[in-house]
Length: 327
Image (tube, rainbow, N blue to C red; front, top):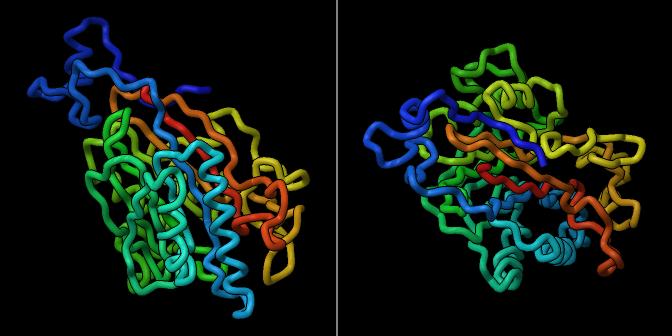
């Protein structure tokens, strides 16, 4: 476990109080915690997964056996100990039909579904086991890309959690005034613009102890999109937890890519999609007074022990399972 983030430090107690407390003495205005309240040792646990909408699967495959893939997903959630928050990408019409009953059946029915039923084939969804304080839809540049966010009450204080699907290589035009908002100059890609929009959105919000951006960013470490978030003081949970960078030869640490043929892209093989790049992220930053302790591991990055009606995997992506605690 590694610790990152800003800390309040001073030579005297008065300076600490000035740096880490609100002016009215009621607590930390950014973290939302009373000054006398210590965060719980119980971490906030989150996961992200691109669940594959199945839009390009042959009709006779039922969105590449979506019912079986959803069942495998629910098994993985329970095996992971039922994270507090789960961000899902690529929620198409078939998944919209299947997920309510599946979610109600897992983890003793503790999850609620939060999302915006917009007219898009590629929607994002948040599953939460903790109380929602606020929520909303973030319409990021160009169709069909979008994000959804919630603020929840957690053991660490209020947590802002956003899940997003950033532009892919097949639909990633350079920004122009009719495509992107003013914060995105006409020299950057739609994909990079999406990161800028997320940074701007969170920059306008206070009161969260932990802010988390997650999802299929369709960008690799070191690329401008990821750097936009790092420059805004987000940290890459995967690396901060001490995990190795993606190794395309062994697929360890990778979440996307691969060269398996359509339509099942390897989900119906024990070898799987053959991930060879890391494009799915959980990134976070702590408020003043919250020094983040982070653990992270892969989610849905191994085949099922036995195939379910021929399916070994829930999606053509791997995901990330991360936990955060204000230390």
